[in-house]
Amino acid sequence: MIHAWENETMNARIPALDSQAVGALVDERWRASILPELQRYIAVPAKSPAFDPAWADHGYLDAVLRQAADWVLAQRIPGLTLEILRLQTADGQPRTPVLFFEIAASGSASGAPAPASGETVLMYGHLDKQPEFSGWRSDLGPWTPKIIDDKLYGRGGADDGYAVYASITAVQALKAQGAAHPRIVGLIETCEESGSHDLLPYVDALKSRLGQVGLVICLDSGAGNYDQLWLTTSLRGVASGLLKVEVLTEGIHSGDASGLVPSSFRIMRQLFDRLEDSASGELLPRAFHGEIPPLRLEQARATAAILGDEVYRRFPWAHHDCAGSTLFTLPTTTDPVEALLRRTWRPTLSVTGADGFPSLASAGNVLRPYSAFKLSLRLPPTVDAAQAVQQLKTLLEDNAPYQAKVTFEPEGAATGWDAPATTPWFEQALQAASQAHYGAPCATIGQGGTIPLMNMLSQGFPKAQMMVCGVLGPKSNAHGPNEFLHLPYAQRLTAAVAEVIARMP
Image 1: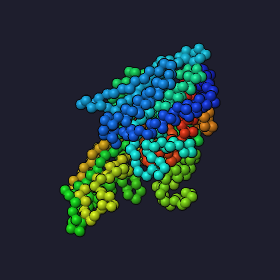
Image 2: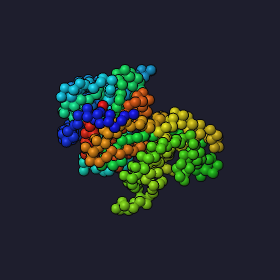
Image 3: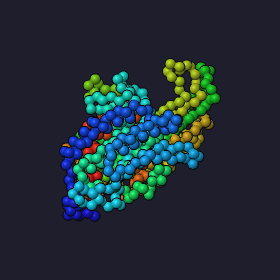
Image 4: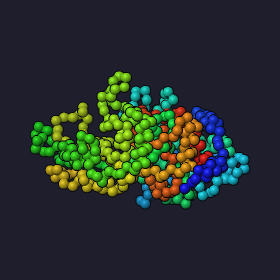
């Protein structure tokens, strides 16, 4: 336990940054250097390997990683070394590459010694992207960077191509003021949007070089609004796969076969009834549910008090009045606290793709031979994803209606993450950083997405503090159409990162 007088002594040893100077330097670096780099980055269709199986031949992932590496080296940061790592699978296939950099610990300009070498800050980000998706505005496109009203539109800028550039700029802000900082390492992957299946071999290979990590900075998360710093306290897990129902070897005239040959789609509906309540969306198997810790309930109430009905109004609802003030399409709940819990701690099912269905223009009177859905099951942070995906397979495949051919092929599983307890120095640093650069206190929020690395790092470095933040605020729409990076928020987040590192004891 750290006593109040110990906190005061500790803070007295930490030289305060000139926050105004930090903000000015960060703003200048964003305008002059980062923004042009991100525009170049957005223009490259560097899709994650799950969406581009020929990624190695296309070379897009290598191109954006090389671009980032060249920019980092061009900053000429004292004590920085960098390399691009390339591993192979057991059968000799290339793994997606990783950028790894290291910055030696630095003493202050006043002559204070460098921090203890045992303390390391790990900065994380990724450069692979989600696919194009449909529905982009006519004046926008996934690979066409465009700035409108302080927002940089295009795929990947916010999720999270900016992270490596922001991380290095935060270090530049420290160097500019001669502030002491611990040893810093960076890990930038190119497989995150595919579940980070290539990352663990790199972490194993780098284990001795990572050091004793005391602080992890991950800039791949979200924000409840653009008015303050947001710390992510939990991430859901995910179990995904392809569910296919086959009843025929080829399509048959529906007038001849329907009523006798069971519809593959109706069988699919029956299988879904095993999994969820279609009226409420509640997942029925209790194994997919997890207990919500009291602290997370308390934090959800505090966050709901800040955001109110913006928790659900932030989404692009299809049915609303012209002014957008009245919703006719309703969310599953209008209680802000419950809304937060449903997108962070409750399990839920999404269908993210389908096969076996002709386009509307080509849909004749044919009883289709099969239906196939791609399923994404979001899991509470504390539920084991590997077990869940096997339970899902058994639930869907056993005792198929009409003895139809039902197969579920798992495509990925990643266990979620629940943040460790916040230490006094980290809480104070977050609040100071948020007040200095946003003029408002730091707030906490759980996120519904998955960052596989976080659970891995928490297990490997159980004493490390986790600064999981990001720029994915209201309507930023990562993975969907019209994704944007909120530039003023990203600039302030960059400055806040510098403040937190400077206050690390």
